[in-house]
Image (cartoon, rainbow, N blue to C red; front, side, top):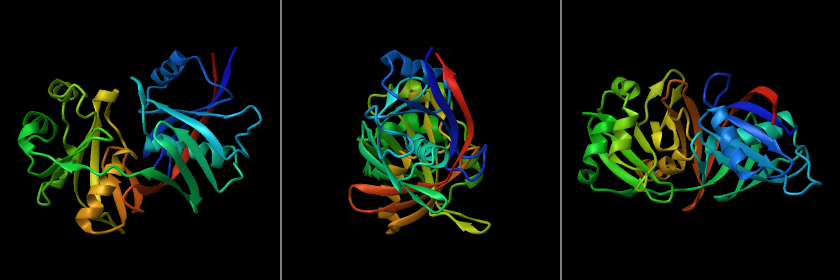
Length: 288
């Protein structure tokens, strides 16, 4: 029997049941390829992360570099922010890793995560979107946001995400309560051009906090209708809003039912720091 340490972590959350839940598995060695997807489907959260030692002499408490892969319930993905944050939380908070920074080798290159007070800071690639002709996306925009007024549509070809910016005068309660139908989105786009829709607005002030921008993210192409808090979507949002607001440091809020807060700092034309908190809420053993 194979036993795999398994954790559930609420990422981009200060307390349990907020933010975005991810499952995290610690692997001594690679699994049979089909097993990764079977485990992710069984966990049935937006992403399951697999942290693997790079050599048998490594240790999760003292090692500084690991392999990291992410799977949605449907397939493997190239980049996942909240599951990376969750993975670092398991290493730092549960395994008490002695390093101030860990490095993950992934399909998106080397990703570094460091501790900063109560937060974890991820060094991620920046994904600049390009402005699109709205008429080209007329049907899916209608399916996604209904009759809400659209200011601009952009596409990030590297991350395969469509960004839809609503006008500043749009009804914010309608933005928070909109419920596109997954089947309608899938009918208008088969995932070849993009695999996720970001809907965003300029920021708002809430008690004690002023957000530079807010967003929601829908990805039925990955088997995840609405992602509660999506780190990879913020690689696109950070690039977009940094240019529009002429700011390098921004505070963002993803307005899903669970919700989550992200601190962003655009470092240069290619990298962005994404910071957030995480809470490990479950520890167990997967027996196979």
